[in-house]
Amino acid sequence: MFGTLPCELVRVAKDVAAEYGAELDVDAPMSRLTTLRVGGPAHAMLTCRSTDTLVSVVRALDAADVPLLILGGGSNLLVDDAGVDAVVVRVANDTIRFDGSVVAAEAGAVWDEVVARSVAAGLGGLECLSGIPGSAGATPVQNVGAYGVEVSSLLRRVQLLDRASGEVRWALPDELGLGYRTSTLKHTDTAVVLAVEFDATEDGLSAPLRYRELAAALGAEEGERQPAAQVRETVLRLRAGKGMVLDDTDHDTWSAGSFFTNPVVPDERLPEVLAAISARVGDAPVPRFPADGGTKLSAGWLIERAGFEKGHPGPGSAARLSTKHTLALTNRGSAVAGDVLALAREVRAGVQDVFGVRLEPEPVTVGCAV
Ligand SMILES: Cc1cc2nc3c(=O)[nH]c(=O)nc-3n(C[C@H](O)[C@H](O)[C@H](O)COP(=O)(O)OP(=O)(O)OC[C@H]3O[C@@H](n4cnc5c(N)ncnc54)[C@H](O)[C@@H]3O)c2cc1C
Image (tube, rainbow, N blue to C red; front, top):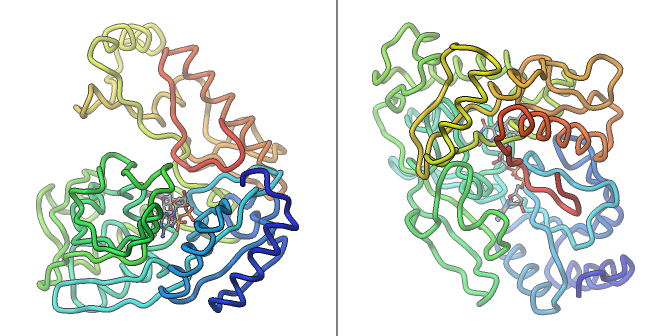
């Protein structure tokens, strides 16, 4: 049913909304629903405020063969200016519960509220993931991570609606193929996350500090555990300094976070890439880390060394690299998706030309490609 006329999408969405109690919006601009604040209209959007509604709506649309886009907080999406050729299903079930050391959140809960409330409840473990925008349900989709912690290390289980069978079931983390900014849920449309559970600790101490900058800011050693509340505050401060905490008044935060993932260079290509790096920057140490499939390089470092400075291409441009963090592509207020895509392509081509390394976008693109 791809290529469905907008009026047909609206008609089907209207019927489904009436039957299952979802809220219908027509021609909702995706620029108001995403943190990059670009993208054309969603011809029909169904907001689902309970898990029952979410399950029924997705089952009904799938049964009618209607294309759909699952939307959480819109913080990892780049939507084309032409809009969305599908019904947008907005996940808005948002109950958060605590049971001993288990933190349970419905998929539509705001992620940072989950973290804040877990810390306030005296639980430790989630604090390094403070300040990441978006919903709890999206956290396993790209295995969100920051400051040395990934959700894969905290996940207890994930409640899924399997879209092929229509079945609702709990999946264990092992089943989800969780890796660096990826899982079997990303780019696949196979399942909708309905709820997530995390294992925290009840001693109020953080996860062991694994990120040098964070440990240093806390005056601690790597591997130490510190009061979770103090770690959360420090993470929020460090993130804000990089434009990585949403702030309506700061265009450096009108982004999708890091726009490119750190590339993993296979062993056989590494000597060639290191030679290109050394030809460009001399003998300066190259940040690199062992990774599955080869060696992980820093995308931000490569972008800067390829000649793109913070704030590129300069004041007056509708889309620029953040002035605080080279890896974030930002909307300075008037950008459209085309501006963001053009900048992404320029940066990607620059890094490819200079170092022979291909950068892959981290956000999910809808109706467009970098
Ligand atoms: C300022 C800023 C800082 C960021 N910092 C980080 C960071 O430090 N670490 C990091 O990992 N990410 C970071 N991000 C990226 C983003 O916040 C995360 O990927 C977040 O988890 C996306 O959540 P969301 O609800 O906004 O997802 P959306 O953008 O709404 O959706 C992203 C993808 O997930 C799918 N999806 C969403 N919800 C569900 C669901 N319930 N079931 C199935 N699929 C679903 C969507 O269909 C889409 O394909 C940052 C983004 C911004 C803007």
